[in-house]
Image (cartoon, rainbow, N blue to C red):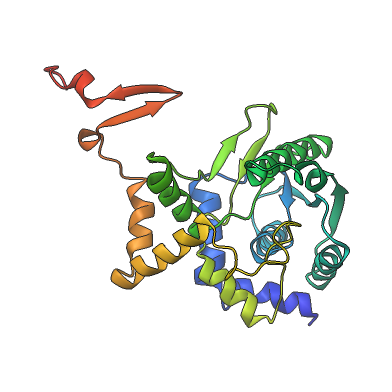
Length: 276
């Protein structure tokens, strides 16, 4: 058996419960992949996007949904070492990637305020344009369960707003394109276990501005949330799941206010109505 075949097999055998079943559940529950879809799978070089690519490949080979996929790497200006490493991993995993270049890092390098925000927005625009060029109707990203919880807590603690990362979204600016997150229910710890079991090494962060920094030197807000979630898990092993489930179990009778499409509604608006 080839090395890549052993890695593929581990997803549906050893990690069937923690990865494959949760991947399939997200695909089914949120209707992420449907017949005749053409999906652009975005690979950044990290563990999450490479696992996503292998799960998509497995679903194409052995699933009962007929769809197509393109495996795309957008190079925003990676250094040659990181780019080479990414290509080597794609070969090791037998993923037929295609690389297209952008100049995002050079564009944002002199931006002092919110360069990461601008970089993320520009990346998204380039990816949507590439998906249209390839005739794809969906873009798959490798965000996982922990990303969802971290985003929720970041929103609450730093933006005083209750919102989360959705499993799929329609594009506002690119008609007919949808963004999907098939690893939505897969925990990061499971992805790390899969990586370590198969003795794989992926890029941690290929950003030109942080590639020379260790996590000890650069403490981000998202890292703060990771630490907070780990602390909550020590208090209650189901804390992360309960946070996630609460987003699917909102009791509107006990909410001060809601906002939809930019329009705010207070609980007082209907408080004295008899038919409430």
